[in-house]
Structure formats: C-alpha cells, structure tokens
Image (cartoon, rainbow, N blue to C red; front, side, top):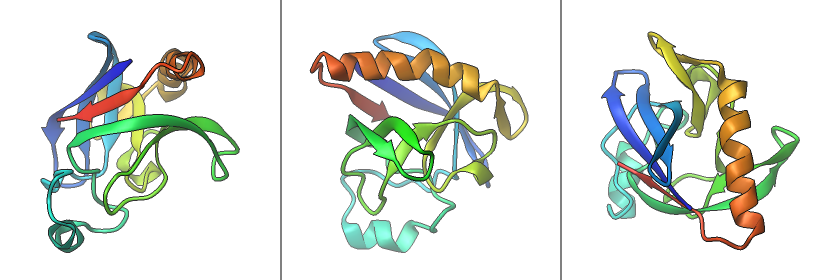
Length: 143
C-alpha cells in the first residue's frame, strides 16, 4: 500500500494536505507548521530548524506500522524512523493544536482546521490495518 500526503497549504501555524491511498483521494490532513525539513537533511540541521510541538515532520518516505498508542489507548498507524521525532501517528483531531507532529485526518472545510475527523479515520484506518495484517508493505510519502 502506498499512501501519499501532498502538502497543499503552508501557513504560519499549520499545514493542510491531501491524503491518498494507492492513487485514490481519501481525506484532507492538518499538521503543524511545515518548516522545510526533509528526511535526508543532516540531524544537526533538523535539530536547529525543529520547534518541539510546532513542526510538521520532514518530507520523505516512511514505513507505516500498526502499534498500540498508550496516549490514545488503541492501535493506530505509526510512521517508523522519522528523524528527530518519536511516536508519529495518524489520528483524529481538528487543529494543529491537537498534535505534536502527528498527521490529523479530516475534511478541510474551515480555515485552519479539519472537520469530520473520526469519519475520515474510520475510512482510512481499516485499510491500513488490513494491508499490514496481510503482510503488505505500507509506506507513506510526504511531499
């Protein structure tokens, strides 16, 4: 399974994107501010540019795994080996204030937020879980 997150609007406090799975649009996303980080940047550069809890993850391609989140009390997709970040997941929420670098799924129908997040998660999460349960490689490319 190939997940693609294309960032479409970079604002001072948040970033809006479009998420597709195997070429099919699934939902919109909201993340923290895109500060221009890239997966292949040196760690000292990432460390200098990142602002804790206010920075979108670096662009690049990451393996997606299915793990238990103690914070949310359930299994969720987790992006594996994100440089300078830990426990990056896809989950429900409405604004960039609802995340510490994670990807929030929903519909961008209001300025600075996504709506209907639980419904978007209900569409996306089972597809990821089923692919992983079939031992299908799952990756997310962020650009």
